[in-house]
Length: 532
Image (cartoon, rainbow, N blue to C red; front, side):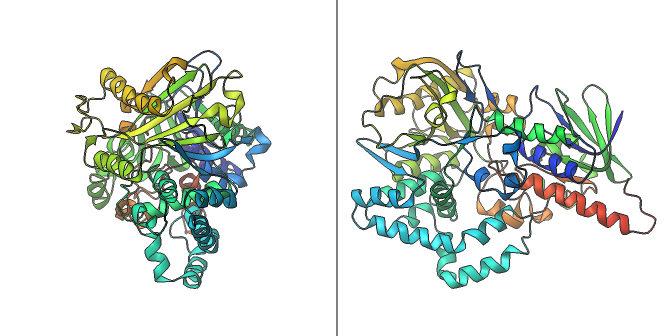
């Protein structure tokens, strides 16, 4: 048995951010991780082919670059270095590329060349965003409710268009792009919206697409030099340098509740690790409520609502080791790190709507990473470390295959390979000879992703749907009101299931740590109460 001020369950980015902040406050902190290495969905490996580094899960970090939380940790002092591809993003269609650059005027010039007038309209959209970005991002990264940023955001919105602007931000991505003359802005907005699980015809999808486009032009889509694992390595180095501990290969099986309060955790090896002040769970909500806690330990209303919690769709990810650069039939004007593959906004809309309706998409919308293009350390000179992923229905859902390929949602080895072939054929159509450059291929389906990171339930990358009914005050469920407190005193949700959701920015971990510190301070002022 061990005793610490705080025990953090899960060494993903949010758990490590929370642990660092608690250690900074002088707490003794133990982080327990089930997997053999820390990082959660921020890890890299060399398993695909000798000499190649592949990011096992996440790869590009625009929200990480914009996060004041990660900036405040000064991870560069612990070995983290960022790098960028020559272009942020390229949307590949037959015979044409639509490009996003870190220089907005360059983005606008390319859009204007394709459709005169679109460049000026794009810059006007950028200027509108500039007026609200600072308070909006402050609100995004602040624990809910964001009391300090909200007045500034409301004032900025009022000055910038009031309700008209609010309405614009709530538009579906397909409608946000309608004022433009050419297809380019729509491809950028819809493609970036497709990073989440928002159908492109759903309210709020336009905002998400706009957010990523604008961040791409300001901070880029950076990657850590050497692989995603270097970001995790910096977080672990900082934590251990402050006295925190990280133990891997330690699966937590129960949160120990004593006298109605979280008192520690039990691990699969039979050990107990007591927490004198708090337990923070960087876990999925289904795992926390379904296995780590007994149903009777949760408030009844919260337990009922958790049963209706909705995951985001599953994912199939394919990694390739290529003997040379991707042989795009039409070379991009500058090499992008991120590539979107879909013939049109209509095709993207169809693919994402099919997934939302429980169908395997016939022409899946592909998000592609050219990692050696972004970071030359990822593979030998002249080669490319590359991946692509696409959203699919959750495993074991009753599905139909819109592509008539006989995939029924089991997502076993055979179905994953057939779907990977479908994805690869889309790239081959734009890059003839692509298959001939493949040295090795790895396919990670929904079940493989979950087996490597239990938080990715069925391959869900976002910790729960990003649709409006499960955001802000509704995240993860209304009973939690956007907060990290779980209804069990001393237990805090510190994962992407909490507000503001997925992506690597550290906000859920930051919010959980702040809540734990605040409750600890409050307990010290209560007569007769010893928080330890």
